[in-house]
Length: 114
Length: 111
Image (cartoon, rainbow over all chains, first blue to last red; front, side, top):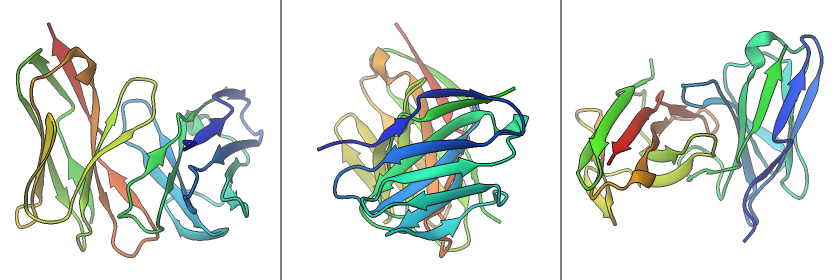
């Protein structure tokens, strides 16, 4: 059973640039969620994708966008990067959509915006 | 509104028992999760409680009281490897998969 993998592991970008983060879901999982985790804080929900459609979205501006592909892998895109976007971005897959299915997290992408 | 509170830090001794508390306020209840997160690593699923009472899973147990909006995670026979952040999380109701996490409780296990 292959777990959730994310790439890249670390990334440094300049304010105003754009970034794409990638995630491969665990085999058998059709739902992917993205979270932002600032240092010392709990993860904050960005959005969830189920079968290539956005199933739900948190309080993030439209410059945060996503995609899910037919193989259930996913991308998170962030445009016009701001310093406050510096954080750990976690991808998690689950067996079912919604919030009551345990999440299986990847190791995250550490994004630094300078 | 929706809110989760848990202590920021706790310290305990190897071999001891520690209880990490979590209080929550949600509009609608759909279960409560506990996750463990070691420094620099991904959170890993520990438990999911929907009904009141204690659920035991090896050295870890989780308790839920829906009427009090309260849960705790109980760790027995503490080991050094249990040093980690413990995150309490509740799903929102009809908000498309959104989990609200607490800020996490940083547990340090000392020899």
